[in-house]
Image (tube, rainbow, N blue to C red; front, side, top):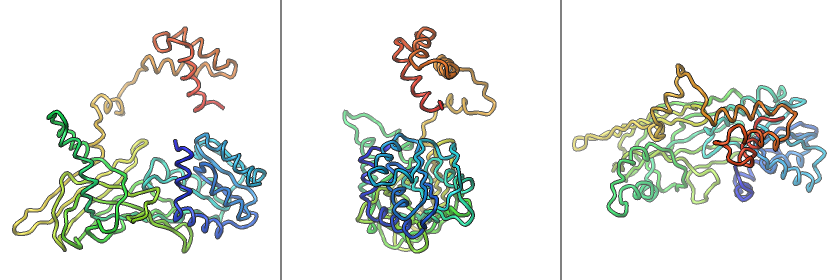
Length: 380
């Protein structure tokens, strides 16, 4: 959940905000219906009204939409804006829209169900001839020298106080993906395009490609750096790539198990893929760093699955042939949901739940908190 400070940082990212402002001004026509997915406080939705939209539907799964209503009123747009607290994939609109605006990326567009949400909105909500903002995201990859970042990542586990040996944590740590901010002078190769997400043509929620790099200078390589370059509309966009000016997105760092000295023109082959599994992306990167007559080179096979530290019991519970039975907590949740039949208040439900499940809810207020959470997610 983002705070108002987080949203303020998004607005203060001038390259991002100015680009979206120009794209909305260029794309939205007087009389258009517009949808913004993941609206937050509704800044882009307000810009759509400013551009002449007849109606703007602003959807966010968080309660920030209620604050967004205040901003709509303060700007004189309350009569043209409808705010909906929901997942857009669970929402229906009374009409199809001419423009869909979104920025539901994390550090990369491969973030949760962001791509699926845009595709769902395109299919169900966009009118024929409608426009999407953004149109394209291009993902870039480069080999990077990230000594300070890498050192901060591994040092606590290599140099623990009290002479503890924490080094067995390193294989987990170095199979993770990390957000950071890097500069152009840290690049050790030319960036390459890994994949292109065309939101107007059913963008895929996964990607895989083989990449061939050649070191542009001698240095010490620590892994891969990823970012995106977006085309919001024709001729308007921005990059989240390495720069002295930090963007809200930053870049994604995929470390290698060890720092590797490389020479100019040394060849580095990478196979990179990302797949959405459940709610999270699993990243895999296989690297071959070619050697010479004096050096055999290096080969690494890595995956964020190896960093998850998932227990065998947890994996077993996800197997197709697993036969589940509810725990006491699960039984309590099921009872609470059944009790939400439109006839009893949350207090009445909570008091009854505390009597029925005293080990789970020692106080009825404990049951009230659980019931309120479930009601927020599933009640009408």
